[in-house]
Amino acid sequence: MQPTYKEVVVIGAGLTGLTTALRLKIKNKDFVVIEKSDRVGGVIHTAVKGEFVYEEGPNTGVLGTPEVVELFEELDGKCKLVPADKNVNKRFILKNGKWELLPGGLIGGVRTPLFRFSDKLRILGEPFRKPGTDPHETLAEMVKRRMGLSFLEYAVDPFILGVYAGDPNILVTKYALPKLYNLEQNYGSFIGGTIKKAKEKKSEREKKATREVFSAEGGLSSLIFALEKSVGKENIILNCSGLKITKNGTEYLVCGNSGETEYQYRTKNIITTIPAYELPGIFDFISEAEIKPISTLFYAKTAEVILGFDTWEGISIDGFGGLIPFKENRDILGVMFLSSLFANRAPKGGALITVFVGGVRKGHLVDLSEAEIKSLVEKEVKDLMQITNFKPSLFVVWKHERAIPQYLKDSGERFEMVERLQKENHGLQIGGNLRDGIGMADRIKQAFELAQFSIDNG
Ligand SMILES: Cc1cc2nc3c(=O)[nH]c(=O)nc-3n(C[C@H](O)[C@H](O)[C@H](O)COP(=O)(O)OP(=O)(O)OC[C@H]3O[C@@H](n4cnc5c(N)ncnc54)[C@H](O)[C@@H]3O)c2cc1C
Image (cartoon, rainbow, N blue to C red):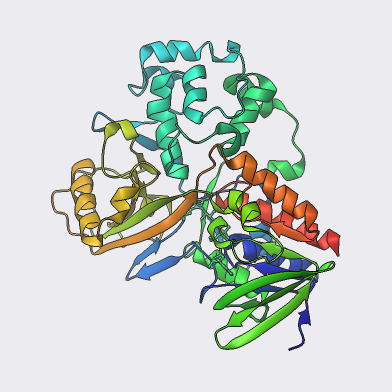
């Protein structure tokens, strides 16, 4: 079999791989995308049942980088960005079994029962506290040092559950929240740094990035379908197995099967966007010892439980949702009010909510049977949302065995190894959520960079 030459081969057709491919297409590069599954989109998957439109993967993104905005601009006419309702900033935190509004400003911050009085006073001194010196300091250590225990327990801990399904006691700030780490390192404080940064002059491109929360009309799969269409189905090979990449001088040979059909590509540019645990055994020019610091990245497991009610009889769900600090010792991590955030997700007068179970500290709950998970969710939802007549017409459990990568102490070693391998193997880029952030905005930004490197590499 004579291998076909491609300027770039992209492995994985999730959000990162598809966005990379779109950038290549725009620059008229000859490329192919190789995908293991029988569909594109990776963890992004919107489902529809009756009038309920729900996500089985990520629910919302943030327009946090110019690249996300530019991607939607590029897909204009094929996919419509939908900003979340203006009440998105209403977020609740559970304390002593009661939902409390997360304060957004100074007055709310003074009045809130979420934080101890001593910590509220302590926060006044935050700008004057010395920056940390340990690059491996965990998020919990950093927040306790700068802001106090109650801020850790009732602000940062639930925030981390919402983003990472993680544990601030093991996440390392430098890797998991690099922007926060840099605020302290570059400006000396979170508060002072935030104020100074807001005053800095921004380029027109930088101004595109906001904190606005988004989805797409019809759900996030519409974004994936628009990407697939723009990239061209003919450039994506699905159902790929037996992937092997060998090196021959300055070229790589990519081989495998798509169903019964064998494929072989020669290329100078390989981009992987697959999860870290999928990497071992793919490259014949990278040893097991070299790939190990990358492939051992720990992913938290979660279960998403989606509930649709034809008629909502619980407490007001006007807002983004509620998060549950670990200290509250409940069986769920939080709940998102999706039908309040986006129109056309539930019947009129009804509601669509998504409950999260598991995460780093409660992963064992994901191992329960579907019926057991439903039963614990029913108990928690009845209690926390004050529903007496619990009769959801949609009740779906979606397990993610390896959902969210955790940027722990070993991340430095992983990043260094990626860099070393890329340097030693020109044209190889090891991308995906094993580096550069876990959110959709991070993935899109990385995709732009991956594509640009290959374009520059010829
Ligand atoms: C449950 C959950 C909830 C989330 N919630 C949010 C959220 O609310 N907001 C947010 O911003 N982010 C969220 N995220 C994160 C965000 O969804 C991901 O970072 C992003 O979608 C990952 O895209 P990706 O393309 O990098 O990876 P993936 O989606 O994992 O795609 C990788 C692709 O590679 C393919 N593949 C794997 N192995 C091979 C192989 N050997 N050969 C070929 N192909 C292969 C896979 O089949 C897959 O299609 C969430 C993630 C999960 C799992």
